[in-house]
Image (cartoon, rainbow, N blue to C red):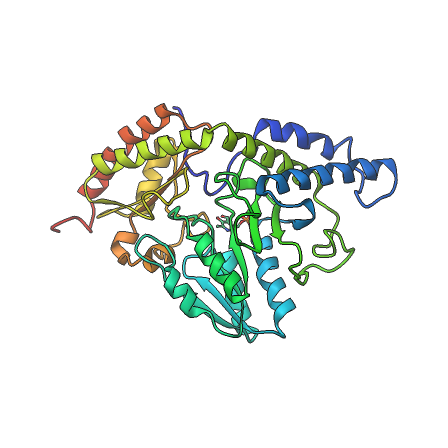
Length: 388
Ligand SMILES: Cc1ncc(COP(=O)(O)O)c(C=O)c1O
């Protein structure tokens, strides 16, 4: 049976070209980059090159990139780092209801630490309304954090408009771009963001390594204290192989964007979306139709239980998800879908299919042949059945 992995939003494979670059750093090139001898200097040079590659992907300066232990850590560093650094100026933070838990739980923690938090609602397509955002800003607001694109429904936020408001009001703006980085062109010289989170494992790099872009002149406090690595903002001997892998993944992403491979992915995504909507009744596309990640398709299939559908798909060799990898397995419907105004029963039928660089037209056709009978079968025995 041919197996088709359609959960690239959860994580991707390490590309073979990335792995090749990483391998020597586990064995021959094992020096500590903070050592002055040749072993250390060789590794320091590799880290500098990786930093330059990640910076190039964002059109940032290398000095503006901090390597972290993943996307969650970069989100924590951005939010807690700004909150601590600017707590004397104000104690109000703005976010949206559909952020990843790495952001939502961090701002919740700030709430317990005496900060005031405004959590903005979203519209039925998962977008923050620009007017709500503007209205939420107060004289004591120090930071707004709104994700670039949502992991569960793929919606891309109006980041430029939100960032421009922050500029005008003199507050810092952070965006969690874990899902967007490497898949959409991002240019921080052009985009009004001050801090931006990335994770290598969502763009064909290794797990456990991320980066925080911090615009020159923005001061944040560290979370991890110690030897003063990463410009004093993230202590600890560097994850050399991971960082080198992130650099190689950034180069791969830049090539893929330049070669139009993302447009190819977008066409396949549209074939999948149109196919699902036309072949199955009572299905709705969740998230925005066009302002969405190029590799992301997500639906709610009415009158069925999403988990049962995932198991049937898995049995048929198709790896899908009900939304986020972190909330799969929980019986609670997704907070993202509820925030978009969906009712519990509809939200229970959620299905996320996220394409990767090797997904083919044939894969999409197989999914379009496999899914409708699974849905039909589940509906036939569903307690939520139409007219039941
Ligand atoms: C939008 C978003 N933010 C943050 C994260 C967390 O990243 P990591 O798993 O690298 O900690 C994820 C991972 O799923 C994500 O999708």
